[in-house]
Image (cartoon, rainbow, N blue to C red; front, top):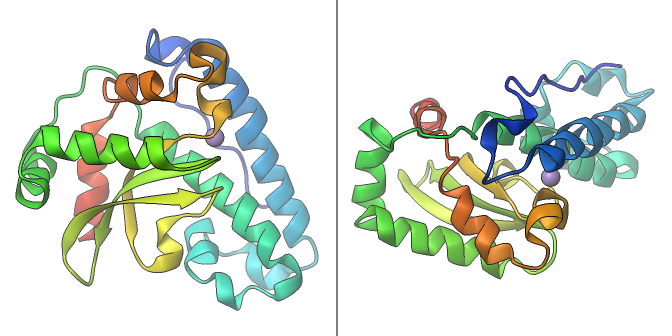
Length: 202
Ligand code: MN3
């Protein structure tokens, strides 16, 4: 096993009542663990790829040989997306500092950012993610959806905040009410981590 499941880093119930403990447990111990296992399975016999950080695999998907590219895209993407996601979640973190400035500059104000992010998350048909990304070419923040486990790195953009809108992320608590899950997600954004991601992206 080359890639390993990272610790969640906090208790399953830390995000209650917005994201429930049972969902967190199944999501981390079940879904994320499965992406890690399948990524390792896909890379068995491909030693040249196994020592690369997963970000690098996803950034350079075209250099992964064709017979395993889809498996790496889905499971490497799943591993990367969830590894980022756990860190982005925390209750009671205020939006402040550089990330607050950047949101104001690129979206006008927080409400406008929130509206656009929600729209992208709600509008993603089927499974996928919505992301706040840093576009290095334009030097600004943008909001983009991705399907399945695709990560913005594949298209040259750097994700700094993401919401998982696969049904496994919310169905136990919210059933078909994805919009309520998204509304509550804004209560568990770890803005300190998002700011760290932004500074690193720049
Ligand atoms: Mn998920």
